[in-house]
Length: 151
Image 1 (cartoon, helix red, strand yellow):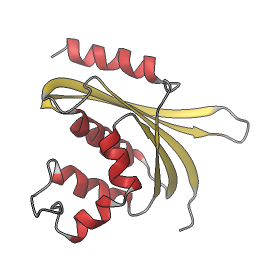
Image 2 (tube, rainbow, N blue to C red; image 1 turned 60 degrees about the horizontal axis):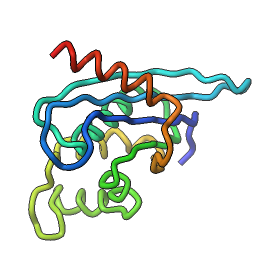
Image 3 (spheres, helix red, strand yellow; image 1 turned 90 degrees about the vertical axis):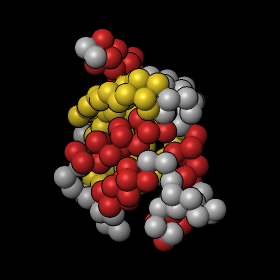
Image 4 (tube, rainbow, N blue to C red; image 1 turned 45 degrees about the horizontal axis):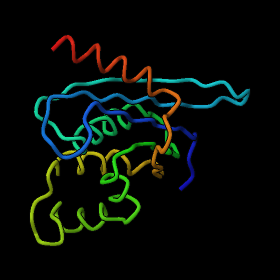
């Protein structure tokens, strides 16, 4: 697939793990110009009784909706479930099986997975774990806190 641009998508959430809590997510889409300087677009959101997985999926969906050209996107997240889902190509299997897992059970957040699949068909997605802080993590975290304080 020929792409028109390369972007990095950095995702941060205020929730870690599978516990359902009220929390926020944020993302930064970064395009590096030829002179090396970045152009960024960002967004934040809030969800009641969400898990880390759901917030990451919500952030990814929101970021993909912002891409107007065919892109090669490298997604950075700490969420091991989402990383594994792509690296092990589970998402392709889930789509084939109408968004059910290997045991035939409908996926949690299957609507988000479906929407992300549909949004990603025009892009090349790859995923990386954020072992160290991403360059936008403090900014995203501060903006998540602002959104959370308004709720």
